[in-house]
Amino acid sequence: MLLLHEAQARRLLDLALFLDVPDEVRLARRIARDTSERGRTHRSVLSQFEATVRGAHAAYVEPTKAFADLVLLNVGRVDRVAETAAGVVRERLARRRVVEAA
Image 1 (cartoon, rainbow, N blue to C red):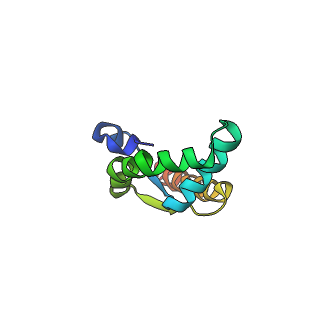
Image 2 (cartoon, rainbow, N blue to C red):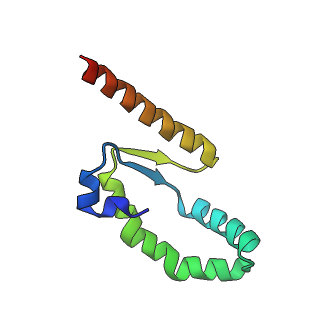
Image 3 (cartoon, one colour):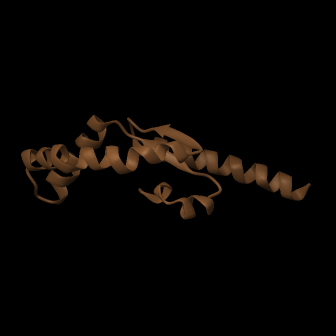
């Protein structure tokens, strides 16, 4: 998640993708996961999100969006965003092969 935060790591990437997920979607997914998989209450998840998660995202994750080659808005199904990202990677690889073959 914080790979784009480090300049040294960014230099190693051929393509940097950033999944832009609005607060309300991140919170809904966190509540669903933590209540079903971790036995937490809705209230405890919401409290943690408000107290630490939202601020940490704003301070550390959100600024890395500026380093992305492509920003994908992720508000719906994760599998569709993953397929879009995979398509971008396949397209880049295909272009690279054409250039290398020339």
